[in-house]
Length: 337
Image (cartoon, rainbow, N blue to C red; front, side):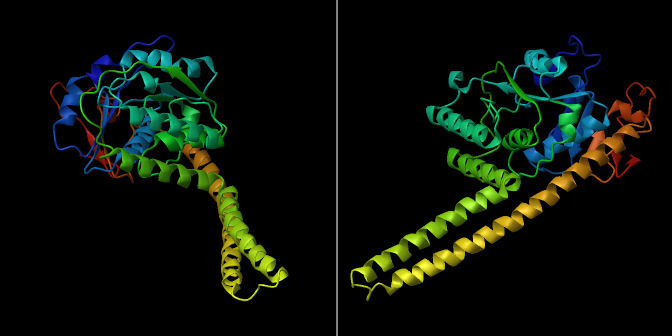
């Protein structure tokens, strides 16, 4: 159903191609994808997780020459008919990345607690990323080629939060548009419970924000410890001033420990800030290398050389039309099988 709903003709788009990510499934995903119109299939020999699947999809799409990349879920949560509206801001030049807004509060399948957590989480991500996306966990999103080239997802849990924070910190023009959803057909396989989802989401937010703003994060923690030490030191001095200093030595010890801890945290923040500068240089180098690599393409089909996935695509016949009934060409380590 997901594949059949994807429009194959969109105004102002020359060609629409469909790429399916098979994350180590044990069923006949390849055959089903092919029979329902998929142009390319990326297959992991074993399950790698949502983030790795997303990154592989971006990588292969860029190698196949995509100018606009649309990401959607395979469970038919998002309506394919909304793709033209989703990519319109990119075509108009007003955005480089667009996130579909599901209007979570109107989705009947979501419990009250999930709706509340979604709103709080989106608010938190908007605050730390400096963006105005109302539905940051929506997986229905579109990237321009330039935006996709700058995405470097490192979170092992989900790409949704990290890509929004990255877009804000890298000053990628980020937009959003209202999209329609279908009724849920199966429970989420990304997490087993709301507490697990909350824990992993908070971990992702803190990790990603710390990567981009390490000095601010460590300074905040360091000042908390230093403030605690200052309060205890002031408490001891107060008792000394009223002649009751004996018996409060523990305040001095605790104040010293908190002060040392706070100072060390500040030093760690300075080191982390220097490391973040190196990370930015590495990301800029990677971005330029990607552009050079893609611009020097020799017309051969995208392969999985050096990757841990296989690419199944009629395009991998290097321009030759596949014979009727012939098996797809699958690449592994740069050689066809």
